[in-house]
Amino acid sequence: MNLLHLEYFYTVAKEGGFLRASERLRIQQPAISRMVAQLEDYFGFPLFEKVGRNVRLTAQGQEVFENCKKIFGEVEELKLSIGKISGECKGPLLLAAAEPIASHFLPGKLTSMLKAHPKVYPNIYSGPASMLLKKIESGEIELGLFFHIPDLSEKLQFEVQIPTPFRLVVHRNHKKDADVLSTFIGSREIDDISTRRFPTLEKLKAKYPKAAIKISSNNLNAHKEFVLQGAGVAVLPEFLIQRELKERTLVDVLPSEEFVFQMKIVKRKNAILSLSASKLMEHL
Image (cartoon, rainbow, N blue to C red; front, side):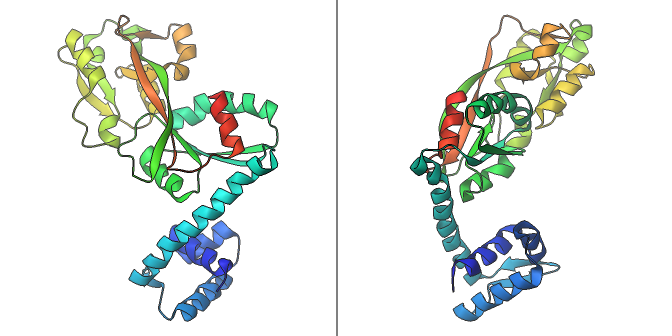
């Protein structure tokens, strides 16, 4: 048994099948199958069982997989520490971010950073926190940037939280339309079904008693488009709607209220940030 046997097994387990592991590793499937079979011979028990066209871990395979996560977590730590050891900021910078952060916030910060550190290669995975936190846990991704996180596991921690101004907005053509102003576009109830309090909605109801969540999406770009179409009101980060605010396409629903939410920067607990990630944190 060597590290390559374990890497092939680990990838099959993570990807849920030999074909996806082959695509991920860019190695032909028969070669991966042979290596996993050799590993099963070494252990003396099967690691996978077939489920339709996919495979799942056996009980013994799950135990081996948990140990592999520790091993490859250490390998990732070594990769990340190389920059600090050499003192040179270079190589992949693996990030996860909610879609509006990836599209409208990170590009400016990363462009500024890359001018000073052109050898860094950012890789940005976009999606909801519920999908991407597992990748941070496993060490596949170093940092995650999200506004709402349903539940943070004991394996993760907040590196920092950045206060971010939001605005509760409506299309200017509907700023006096009671029906539109009472239609709140929500998101937290999708990411976390246990959510019971909606502070922004409560403030809106104080002025428009009939206000209620009538559209839900965990994609803030979709919120913005709904508002632009005149479908309702939404609370959106200022960086997402700067142009529309400047052009007065969107206007404040509650101009006297201040809305500030935390952009949460997440990493693995006790993980040492790579030099590239540390430099990005300075720019954030």
